[in-house]
Amino acid sequence: EVDRSVHVWAVHAPLTGERAMSDSGNKVDPEDVPVAETATTGNLAVDLMNAKKANGDMEYAALTILESLDGFRVEQKLELIEVVTCNCWEIPNEYTVFDRDGKVKLFHAREKTGCCNRQCCGEHRPFTINVFDHTGKDDKKVMTITRGLHCPCPYLLPLPCCGNHIKVHYMVDDAGNEIDATSSDTVMSRVVMPLCGGCCVPRLDIRDRANTTMAKIAGPICCVTDCCGADFDVTDTKGESIGEIKKIGAKNLREVTKEFISDADNYAVSFPESLSPQIKMAMLAALLQIDFLFFEDSRSPREGRCCDLWLCGCPCACMPAFCCLCCYTSKQEREKAKKNKQGGAPDVEVMER
Image 1 (cartoon, one colour):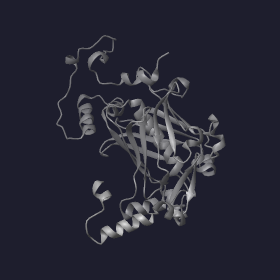
Image 2 (cartoon, rainbow, N blue to C red):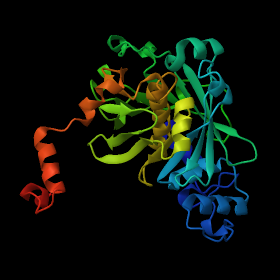
Image 3 (tube, rainbow, N blue to C red):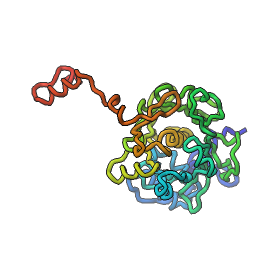
């Protein structure tokens, strides 16, 4: 049995070193591989894309480009029908994955769910999201992300049928052909919510196909929805930071309006260039889980919900009347701020900081 979680990416790696093979299976001398010279632009993704176009090698180009990137940007498509119906009619979600600077389109993700599930189950619905390589003439499916029906009850979180477990399927075989259907053999990684969801801090675990934890994701205690955004830190098993998933908040009036009238959101994902592509794609799956948990459907400021408090796997509405709890400052802190504002030398603690 092929360890697909490790081996499949080597198939699409650049033709260099020991991995360079000819169609007959013989090793190819790297010096014999033609490489077209292209002008550099200062953007790694753009330079890699130009080089592949010059060489005529656009087969699953996004996968090889992803190996060299240190982040990507995800933009959700704004659906006009949802805007007109005030989100009363849910349309399948679509996402476009760009490089970190938003200059190169890498992947296009489309949700595939039944109409009844979307209208009746909302953000708790089961989903299948197909991810396509968007760099060639035709979109080719490279990955499928699946989740079962999500149950918001924290006491049922350990059950696998409750939809808090996402499976990431790699849909390209070792010969570079598209795989028709998902199976246990196509599972590349998993995104799993631990028992009780991390209590007051939303947590997700990234695991390999053998269910061994590779990375952990932790969000803020108060997940500010839509307008303000939120940061989710990604760490390895030793607790060292290896990346971040950031929900981008509104920066101007146009973006604020968009957040009020729709559930279309933008995200930025950062990680070291040397990070395994397996974890990079799992972070994309975790991003989609975060989008459905916190930023989908009825979670909107227009309904009086400024943020969601995470309690044992369930996002609970935090009304504007309780914002003083998050913004509260002690009497001592207020006196220090007033003293510094009036002038004079700052306190010793302030100078030491």
